[in-house]
Image (tube, rainbow, N blue to C red; front, top):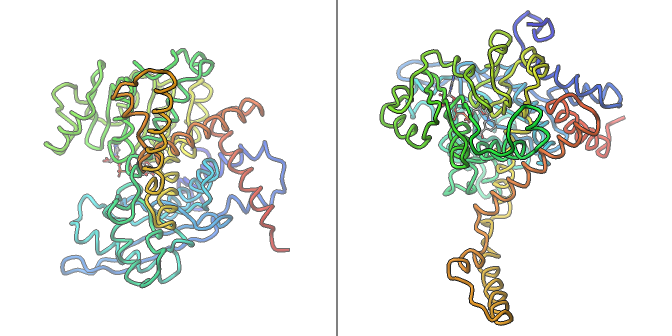
Amino acid sequence: MSKNNKNKTGAYSFFNCIKKNFDKAARFISIEKGLLEQIKACNAVYSMHFPVKIGKEIKVIEAYRVQHSHHKLPCKGGIRYSIKVNQDEVMTLAALMTYKCAIVDVPFGGAKGGIKIDPQTMSEKNIEKITRRYTSELIKKNFIGPGIDVPAPDYGTGEREMSWILDTFLSISPGDVDALACVTGKPISQGGVRGRKEATGLGVFYGIRELCSMKEDMFSVGLDVGLVGKKIIIQGLGNVGYHAATFFHEAGAIIVALAEREGAIYNKKGLNVSKVILHLKNTGSILNFPEAINIENTENALELECDILIPAALENVIHKNNVNRIKAKIIGEAANGPITPEADEILEKKGVIILPDIYLNAGGVTVSYFEWLKNLSHVRYGRMEKRFSENMNAELLQVIERICSKKISTEKKKIILRGAREIDLVRSGLEDTMISGFHKIRNLKNSSKIENMRTAAFVLAINKIIDSYEKLGIFP
Ligand code: NAD
C-alpha cells in the first residue's frame, strides 16, 4: 500500500484513493488549483450517534450523512447499512456520487449515508426503528428534503427502508405536496418509478454491451464483438449483481461463476441465473447448486478464467495481493471502488479494459432522477400521451395500409400501435444515458490521449463541475 492511500493515523483511506484518481485526471485540466481543491473536498459531513432501545438494552448507533458537493442541489446518494461503515468510506462514496451525476448529466451534487449495523443479524422491527430514528436525525439538521438532500438505496438497503424514510419524513411535513421526492428507490405504491429496482444492473449491462460492440476495443483485448458467448463472473448477487446477471444471461452471455459471501459456484458451460436464485431462496445459499461446483473461498472466484469480471458487492476486492491472478480482459465496476489504485495500475499495464464505477453504476442515480422528477410532476410517465400515441399510430397505419393496398399482420400491428408505458420510457432514457455516457468518455479518452477510461471519466466529470462553478460564480 502506498503512503498516499493512508490517512493521518496511518490507516488505509478509501477517500485518498479517490483523490489519487482525481489528481491523475487533474493533469489534463488547466484551471486554478484552488477550484480543484474545492471540487475534491467534502462540503458537509454529519457524523452522528443516537440511542435506540434494542430488546432491553440501549444501543448507541453510529451513522453518517455526507454531502460532498453543493455545486448543484439537491444532493443525492444512497444509504448503506453495513458493519464496515465509517466516515472515510461514506465521504468517498459521496464524492463518487458527485462525479457520477456529472457524467450522466443528472443535476445533483453527490451525497451518501451510512449506518454501522449488520442488518443480517437484526430483526425487521429493529432495522425499522433505526431507520426512522436516523431519518429524524437528518430532518433535525436539515439533511433531507426534496430540494436539499435525497437518499436512495445502496448496499444493505432497499425499497423497504426507503418507505420508512418517506413515512417518517411525511409525518413531519404535513401539506408538503412535494414530500414524496424526499427519497428515491421507493415501492411503486409509495411514489416509486417502474424500472428503478433493476436500474443499476441494467445500466451495467448497457455499458458493457456498448463496449463489447466496439470492434477496435474488442480487438485490443483479443475478443470478438458482441456479448453472445462471452464468459462472465459476477461477485455479489444482491440488487445490482442479480439484475446484471439476469440481463447478461438473457442476452446470451455465459455466466461461468457467481460469488456470494458464503462461497462461489462455477460451471464452465454456464449457470442458469433464475435457477440459481430459486436455489438461493430455497436453501439460503448459492452453494451446492446441482449444476455447479462449489468454490469455498469466495475470493478465488475472481481469479477464474473469464472474459468479463463484474464485482458487484463491495470495495477493494481487487488489490495488490490478487491482481496478478486476475484473468479477465474486461472489468466492469458495478460496485463502488472495487479496485485499489495499486491494482488499477497493474491491470492497466496488462491492457485490461476497466469500465469505472463513476460511469458504469450510474444507472441507479439516473433512474432515481426520473423518480424524483415524477414525484415533483405528480404524474406517472406516459399517462398523458400513451392513448394519444396509440390513436395516432392507428390512424397512420390505416393510411399506410390504404396507400399500399396491403394488410399488416395483427402481431406487427400490436407492436407498432403500442404507446409508451412508464417502464418503456424509463428504460429508453436509461439506455440512452448509458450509451451516450460511454461515448463521451471514450471520445475524450481518444481525442485527449488519456491513458484509460477511469481517468477520462474523471476529466469529463471535473470539467462539467468546473463549468457549473464558473457560471455560478464564487464569492469574492
Ligand atoms: P446489496 O446489499 O443488494 O447486495 C450486495 C450483495 O453482495 C449481497 O448479496 C451480499 O451478500 C454480497 N456480498 C457481501 N460480501 C460479499 C463478498 N465478500 N463476496 C461476495 N458477495 C458478497 O447491495 P447492492 O445495492 O447490490 O450494491 C452492491 C454494490 O453496488 C455496492 O458497492 C453499492 O455501493 C453499489 N451500487 C449500488 C447501487 C444501487 O442502486 N443499489 C447503485 C450504485 C452502486
